[in-house]
Amino acid sequence: MDAEGNEVLPLGQVDTVIAAVAFDKDGKVVKVFIDNAQTKVEFNKDLTLKSDPNAEYKTKVELGDDYGMKKASSIGKEWYEQAEALGDWMVGKTVDEIKALKVKERDPDHPAVPDDPELSSQVTITVQDYIAAVEEAYNNAIDVEPGAETLGLGTKISIAKSKGLGTDAEGKEVLPLAQVDTVIVVSAFDADGKVVGTIIDNAQTKVEFDKEGKVTSDRNAKYKTKVELGDEYGMKKASSIGKEWYEQAKALADWMVGKTVDEVKAMKVKQRDESHPAVPDVPELASLVTITVQDYIAALEEAYANAK
Image (cartoon, rainbow, N blue to C red; front, top):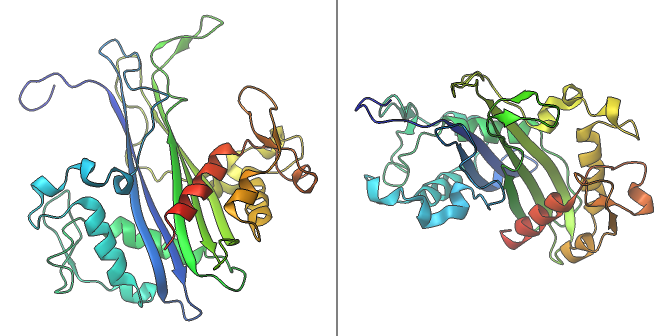
């Protein structure tokens, strides 16, 4: 029940903060994309899954005006407009200069709103997570091939592995689970549309419930992407080629360099099993990549379409 006595149904919400950033040789921001995939998985009163596991889920930027912040905004700006303004303010600054932004607490839900004349009429969202993501982007930045002209960000979100309360094939109880897989591809392109550098990642975040519908996952824990997990993800022991997920993702990203999106999309693939319908079937990747790649290629295509 909420404060007014209305029934509140179980909900798993995953907020995945994303920052795609290009830096120059002096560590100053050249281009930046800021986004947030706020994905909700709803359950019915009987704890069966209410949300459509096959639906297309969008980030706040992709939702655009449909996100609906403008009507409640004191400055009359939608979320994507505020995120873009924050990104524009970052251009030309180092991470340390960005971290030095003066902020103020608007309320408990907004502890770090910009308190800077340049941003006061453009940004009222709380910014601490976006600044932290830009700092992480800098710490994990990769060198790209010469000729980078544009930067793009692509995502693909799925809740297909979420589950309602039930039993499995062996009759064992299955507890409710909200699982959100957020594929993230950041890519730089040259003037001919060829990839000069790519980072591939997947934020596979799980919100677990008990059989009463109460969240058992730690709401305050820091959840990591597959790349951030590194060897802790635990794919290597089950891998036929003995490679961890982050190693396979990097091998796929390296293979993309020097190719256009159309050339990447033309990659020959094969179905390994029902869960792996598009595994690379090219000699260069046979000993390097056994993960299914269709979502990463789709996200690369979106990154190119959105590149600036």
